[in-house]
Length: 319
Image (cartoon, rainbow, N blue to C red):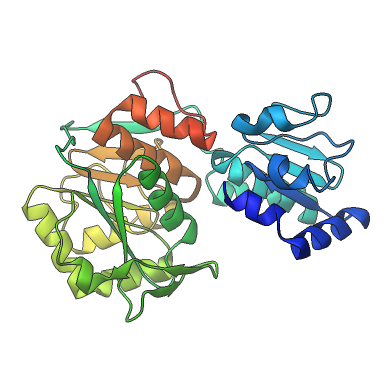
């Protein structure tokens, strides 16, 4: 909200979606959209549906389903940002079949190592700061869109000051899956500030462009020398490795990148070693961002953010 309300008020979109439903082609909504847009358009009639828990009481009682995902004929609905991977895979399965959906799920690490701890921490140190945490997320052409957006989104929900900075000549970046991202500023301008944490997103092409940025290299070296926090997800721990910032550090990374790295830990989605945090990427990035929130503010803040996302998060302090 208010995005769903603005979608609801778009007459062109209403006509497109209504025609989709009339012709029995696939349509759907996630989070607040089923209750705020699809319901007043009459597109939930006699359909089982779910939505964000905060809007659940708006759905017709008989057809409302309290589940993360609901497929009812041509209609697919889901509860929130934390269920978006599940929602997207359900659409993939309907469009291409179960085998393709399973393959994509495995590539995204949707169900890997479910029996192992989400986060494993070594050489525990306190990350708490007396001010609003200031975080830099550098991006490049080819950076992994899901990772950039998810990290910035979750940290901002937790009231972290996040700066997304482009290492390109423009603030406009074309991410790995064709999503266009507009950074907050260029890396040269971002370099004028000091950050409590610098996070590198993955994406093979983007990782290489991050590695070549002299400004970013200087920032990372200064971050390490000053004893401040830095992290990386997916393939980008290789950037830290090539800059000499992973010596004797426990870490994790994308399986394709992990062969280049020593001291890799098998199993957990997120590994914290002192003031280094790494993650495997894709579907593990929500755990990664929430682990950062927990380290800065405590477990209760992380759990509160997760609940707003409808993301399953442990209730105990052990993560």
